[in-house]
Length: 373
Image (cartoon, rainbow, N blue to C red; front, side, top):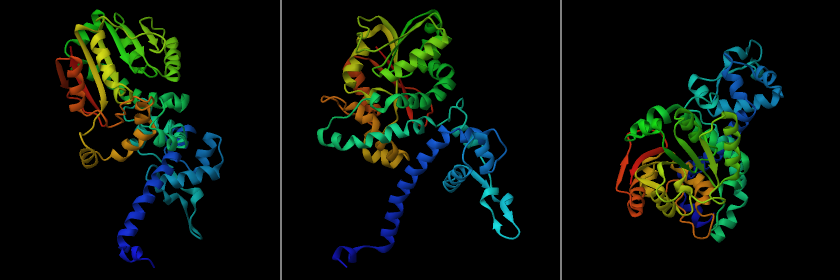
């Protein structure tokens, strides 16, 4: 036994090991959630009053034994529920094959109902693409150079779309926009709107549908996201929307835009201050900017003490957000929790904006700001 071993507290060692392997348990279960989403297992359960593993397998045209083991993981992780009363055999006791698996109403909202604002499968959709970047990270740590969102492939874009679209569809028009001074009336009358970092175009298309007198331009550098946006635009039949890659066309200039929106993207940008300056220049004198970005504390201590999801967000930052923000050698590298309100306000005032106001909107992840020229 070494001197180091002698200094170990056996109980503290057990607790530390438990914590470490709990993280691994969560990662593995996240993979199982991805499988459940991809195979439609949650939707099958949501459409029933409870099924055995054989019933789930039959509905999904899948192998029962694989489904049963997946169900065991989900029950152990407290994601789906198990009714064992159906599985009791007088001679042998519980029989796993007879267990009935169910989803609670809350589980249906998060796992199976894509229309519910609490739907949460977007990040799990892009989980394999995100984790695939683990092979690139050692080199990023050595060189300091990250990778942009297209490194995550088409599923990365779809995952982002599925992450943010349900809440946006439910609340953007009726809750968020009315909080902005005069914007709804202006949109009804007809103004020029630019959504920077538009992704797959969900917010742009939603606003364009509700405000046909206004014109909307969605801007993004992700070819995968813009391809999705173009597909959705074609299906929508809308004629007041354009999607643009700024690598191929310049951003609007000369005070020609009435309203700018940015949803969860400024912290991902290599040059966030330059983008904010560009937003200032493109806005008319009475223009406004809706900034939506991740709620963050000013320090690590703030985030760790107040945000129960801090570990997840810092990890996602390494795998995605900060990696994007460092995807060129001059990137600022803000990262997922890198744009707290104080810094956002500082950047806005440095660019020339005169008014910065946080909106009274409750959201589990995001903060909302109205910024006026």
